[in-house]
Image (cartoon, rainbow, N blue to C red; front, top):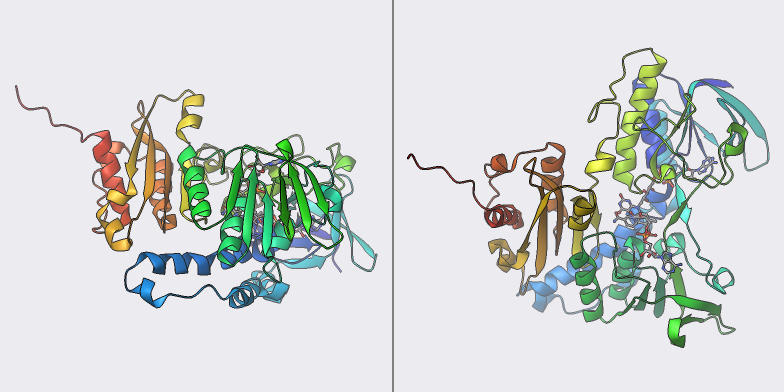
Length: 478
Ligand SMILES: Cc1cc2nc3c(=O)[nH]c(=O)nc-3n(C[C@H](O)[C@H](O)[C@H](O)COP(=O)(O)OP(=O)(O)OC[C@H]3O[C@@H](n4cnc5c(N)ncnc54)[C@H](O)[C@@H]3O)c2cc1C
Ligand SMILES: NC(=O)c1ccc[n+]([C@@H]2O[C@H](COP(=O)([O-])OP(=O)(O)OC[C@H]3O[C@@H](n4cnc5c(N)ncnc54)[C@H](O)[C@@H]3O)[C@@H](O)[C@H]2O)c1
């Protein structure tokens, strides 16, 4: 067995797989180490199973909005069928398909838990306790992801609370589900489980989806309430207890209590770095790993960190974007080739700072990229903000009865380019990429007038937003 590789990747989630793939394509020999399932969180306990749990509810809501379909869709969701579909999407938690992909891509896999053991050295401990030491000729890339945080709420540790893992892999639908945390996971899982028949109580210490435009969280809260969920904002739990009969009691500020059959903690993530041997190279276990825009770790020219573990952006697509830059730059540096680190260059993840797209698959959907109005103002950019009600676009009336939604453009008035876009409404996810291209391409507003949206599509909201900004006028001859 070889003990030396050009590159050792720790963690075979979506991000690690992509770093390895790019590096192999760049001519390096690569070992990837995985302690659980090849494919990582996204495939088995995050993006994919959560979207499978949400899809049927979204389709049924769409049918209810459309006269004719509404009359045909009179029942409730078949929760068992949804759970079975989710199991298929999560490949029944069997990673053999992804292992085959690694093999085809020319990436060698080692199963086990990897720990750094000084510079460029990694010790792999397999399930039977056997260890193997490998060294990297050029680089080690840490792609170990993140894990759910459990906040220090009295009693929570002992209450057998579900995290994102248990809720996305749930085997049945609890009658009453309480969710602590009004962020992305909390809102998506509240949407899914309310539609699957749970009575959901969502407990958020602020409003919902803080950090996005305020109208996003407000629309999601309103819809959840309309569907029967109990949404409590501006309140925190003070005590959680699992009772003798298996139920859970959650005590809130002000002593109100909530009874539930299961409780989910969805209060953010921590770096998966606590048992990674970071101390052997002078870094601190448990910390997010700081990197430059080529994803190289500050102060260690052989070490890279990519994806969630950096804490830069906790999204699969953005981690994979970083991975493409990192895999390519590791290969370039190994070959002594030139490296392009200028903003928007091949080897840097510039978009992390300026154009991170995200879709929240709630009802209504929330799609955003770039800066919110508040973030743009805070960063000192001279901005203009325009809003348009999506219900006024022609396509909305065809889409379904009483369509409601909001789109917001944030414009940098000095550079005359879009720096932020948020849209909230049913089936708006696919509107997002146009905005991402406008921001990354720094397309001048005047030119956007020539990007004509098809009639009647929801994309016509672009035209309405431009009209709200004002058509550039032609100066009449004097
Ligand atoms: C419920 C939920 C839903 C989400 N939905 C979306 C979504 O719709 N869209 C989106 O873009 N993002 C979504 N995300 C975020 C997304 O899941 C993460 O951004 C993504 O999984 C990060 O990928 P990663 O490869 O960096 O980490 P991970 O997927 O966590 O992979 C890290 C891998 O490293 C392995 N590992 C860790 N330590 C070691 C070690 N010492 N040795 C060997 N192996 C190790 C782990 O077993 C794991 O397989 C969601 C997250 C959650 C929690
Ligand atoms: N569709 C998607 O793109 C998608 C879906 C799910 C998750 N994700 C990603 O996964 C990551 C994790 O999601 P998340 O929802 O766990 O984190 P989050 O940061 O989005 O939300 C955490 C929420 O918990 C609250 N909170 C924190 N500590 C608390 C406490 N002690 N008591 C009460 N509330 C508390 C915060 O105020 C916040 O509202 C996100 O960064 C997100 O980008 C993405």
